[in-house]
Length: 306
Ligand code: CP
Image: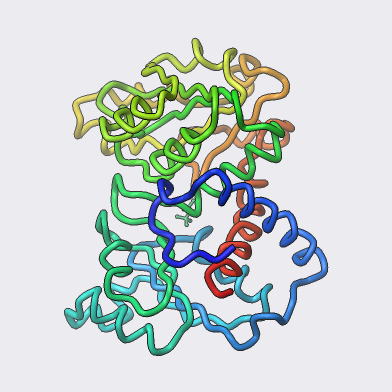
């Protein structure tokens, strides 16, 4: 499998996803051996215009496990020539002379697309703006679901939190919408509901979905709960009561409403969504997600580096 730019979830076909997950399974064996030196002559540049722990470190870890090398800037707005006013396009043209692949987190929706338009080397979108996309997170989320429930067809998923701005949820909804008989429950206060562009896509592809605000009502019905942040400061900005956040908080009592075989997922970081007291429950899958992130990103790097 050969991929070029990785910009949005819609670009992945079902056969590509199957091939990617087979490659990810193989990467698990490579990782278990401590890695490979196969990519010792390759360089990955990670350009992060926004903060990150998981995405940047897991991409860098993945590249090192493949034997490759890493050039990295966090807070590119401060620590690169972006601070002197250099455009994204010029930065990408320059870094293309130093590396074989660019992993880009940008603060504007469409940043990765703009970068890809001028880049001579593959660009991987590591998250672009509020309400943009985060396709590699969605791929690791989908892989975690696949490993947890075995078959994605017919899976029932509750997507919970700030669905308006959450790029992980948006990218995951696009991916899940590719599978037959999937049911998606979008669970959020009304001013944080999923945007119309996703609903239009799901309608066009005959995907069942439901807009909900009551988490407790949905929990017994689903195979996967995908919780995301609701930022307290946004609640008040949007005229919601601050107490609303507690309706989406998952603790031991709320967990009892979920089926025994269900998965509780979160892209992390978590703040007010999941109690640490549920971390040891077998349904808590969020730290498995972070491990799968390295494996998926190894597979993606192999796919773009050839
Ligand atoms: N899930 C995620 O994107 O985490 P980071 O912001 O830490 O990369």
